Amino acid sequence: MAHRIFTTSFASIYPHYVTKVERKGRTVAELHQVITWLTGYDDAGLQRVLDDEVDMATFFDRAPRMNPDAALITGVICGHRVEDIEDPLMQQIRYLDKLVDEVARGKKMSSILRGTPASAS
Image (tube, rainbow, N blue to C red; front, top):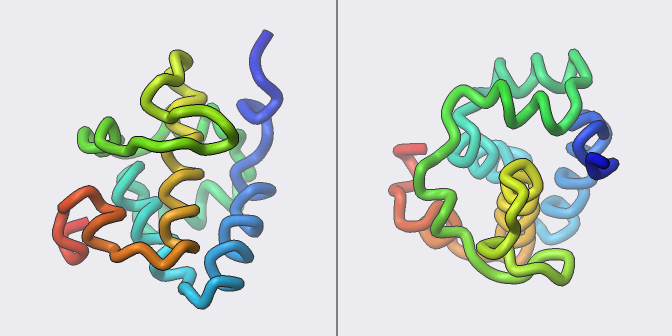
């Protein structure tokens, strides 16, 4: 049985990401930067996904370009090591959660983007 998060709309989760980063003094632009780095969505593509209320499975399935450096994202999120998650979709979702957490924690963008220059995202 598929996990409930797979059929949850990205649009219903996105405001929680925004609240999380803004509460910690970070910006929506920084949030978009990590989403773009991970998935390849530009601002217009991200807006389309939000407007269409696509579910998380579709969000990642239609991602223009998953970053090959996503495998460098490690650590614990929701009690699970992201590098050890076996389901590819769940791992992608947790990668995004981890990036959002790192933005909210005030980590340097160059570190969050796993060494990729911030302007190259």
